[in-house]
Image (cartoon, rainbow, N blue to C red):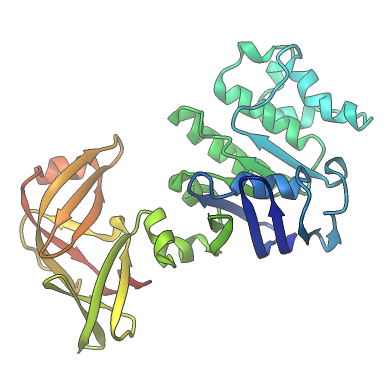
Length: 343
């Protein structure tokens, strides 16, 4: 368990203030936020690379912020691997053991990460995925209690990234290591983490389970960051136990109780697009127009225009083809009242 209390780190160009952060046993926490939010400074402060202006850091109820980095039993892996080019893979993995004057067999961790056949190779001869496995083995060889990952998958191609996601998740679960993983990739957070912490301007603006943060982001910055649609409206009454909200010139129904002016969010994947009107139990059915289509390979993002507002929806290329959708088409959009959240 990692716990941070009343942390303040002041550097020349950034200030980090974290009143409280708790990473519990079994947690895999995704740390997200825009560039410059302070994510790397936070994890490096946990590792001991920066002095604290104030605050306390605990691992399993033992205070560690007064200890030097090599006494904290924390490992960190960066995006650029940081392997020594003049050392073999085996020498790289053993380097932390050498520094701490320990003699341990590295074959178990090498086998666990599938690199036992690479031990005599040099980093320059390895692929991106192999380099990342070696960097991870070097981090885990000392059996750390906390593993800090600073965008370690961002430089990998899609196939290697998919393989590494599963490998990392399986390995840390088997070893019983808690993780804080810095990532800009929402897909990585969805697939790997059970908790998410969002940083903005040196502060944590939302912490929660993956479902809480992505389904009900708060405040507006978080909703925008996690790609949720943001709608401004005003409550105009209730119908059939649902709250009716006027957004633009349309009426949108939500399952939450609210009054006055409200800010709503809805995830793009919860919006169904149809070429023709269909029978549906979904309370919200609105007619609109496709004004933009962006093909991202595995998904297609649609920007839909209505009277006074727009929405983003995400479909598969197969769905686009089956519906024969193109920019300029008039379409019908459907979504559940329970899919709309009050920010």
